[in-house]
Length: 385
Image (tube, rainbow, N blue to C red; front, side):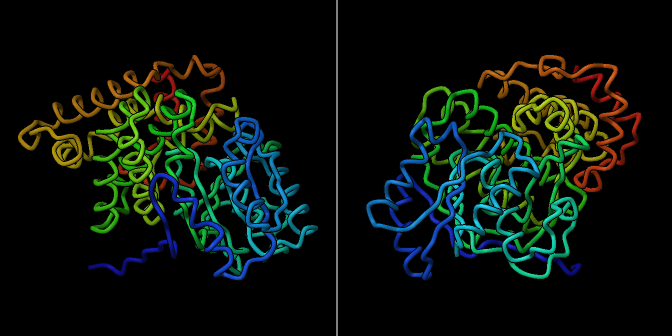
């Protein structure tokens, strides 16, 4: 067996109301000043208060930074870093979706590696010297799994690209996956982030670098998300929300260690250029890319259909396996209300060459099971249009 490295976070709590452990953990770890990173929509919706009220009640000192954009920018990281330094925080607490957690990760890294405050140099595989400032992650969406991964994504607005920063030094020391925080997600957000999680699980399962451990996590995540997402989104079913929350976390444990593929390479460009929400971009692109990749991994598709989606698919021909998996994913998207195409999120045909050029440089591309050219990317954008 090849030498396989696997990185996971230290401690996690799961379940409805799990945030009740927060203050005990803060005190046990000796943290005195908490830098709370969230976003204005969550503050306005009263979701952030479900956490900050606990800090207030226990008289824990904290400072709030809530300027995070849906596709967080270099400026978000720098503004937060400046405020965090001024406050002299000894711990960062992220309450939010991938945007808040990714911004918090960037701030955490800069606090202990101030020589990297250009932020641009953090793109790709990182070589930071020190672990970031300790970070606690409390996701409010069931999608990105940023609370357990070594990745964070920051938009470089000047170059119109998404930087995928990969750094074991950014992994949160503590994750609290409180599905009560997730249950207040608007339906559209719950659908998009859930499809993001399913993309993580499927891409993690078929990536070139997959291994026994990663596939164990990815397959369980596919089961939990595929079988529960529609109920979680449409019926706000508590058990289904719990299962999707757990599934997205488990997906993160897998893909964080083996990478993703070109669904993400393409989705990152839609986010950077048109500000398309990341989960929505993944949901739109996933069936098109699955069809493209099917020629080299139909055997893995049979496993996904059988073990992950409860079908008897092991005797399917390659063509049947590819067609069926694409249909299953499309059907789930439609069940949760995602019917958009690339055209509907503002993409223009004249931009396809530019988007393809950027996708060729994306750090997720090398993990794709099938090799891909710039022309392939252009054709795939065209197909998803």
